[in-house]
Length: 299
Image (cartoon, rainbow, N blue to C red):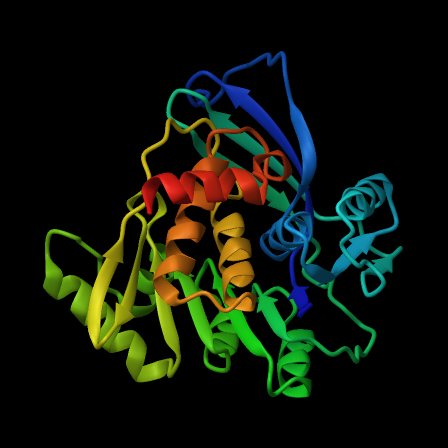
């Protein structure tokens, strides 16, 4: 079995569901809250291990209750946590997520110490590497130490670290926001020229395979020198938290198992779409059987 390494951000999420986004300068009482681990690379690692892959997560946690809970969650699905760094100087990253249950949108408030990063030098072999831009030095080292590994980035937001890593990976799987901010061009699916212009500008800098995720619209990709749209499935959204993370986790799974790009994107779209029908990032991870059942229905 191939060894998968996920490097980057881990947080502890507290999700608060509300009927409509709260007004400013108001008091609001909520009856329920959902607590679980989160973070792009962390959620992807959780999915991959739950789907039976040999997966290790590398990131930093505080020596506190939230960090211990994240480790416990990882162990439940057999994620290898031997390389997780516990730093007592910092608190585990904490995210508060307000979910509007009327439309499934979410607003996230995250606290992370800017100095919190991996300090130990790591030496690990991997066949597939997923990075999210949070641990720049460790990500570069892992990719350089494993020249034969397939490398993938979850490029969510435009940051210098994310741009640097995006230049050295095999697959740049980025959000619509990342692509639009980098190119200073808005993607309009009704205007094919906007899509072409974004791809041309991105390809001038990034010499790899480019996929642009479009949330509920699916994703853009290139095959046979043509830019194509892989549509997603229609679902009723409850909470969009972690949908992109799980799309990337499924993408890694498919690439590790040798699937072609179109099957990979179909499965990844389905995984992300199904996740928004449940509340909370970890609880949004459907089983592989559940995903493949929907894939076979929509193939």
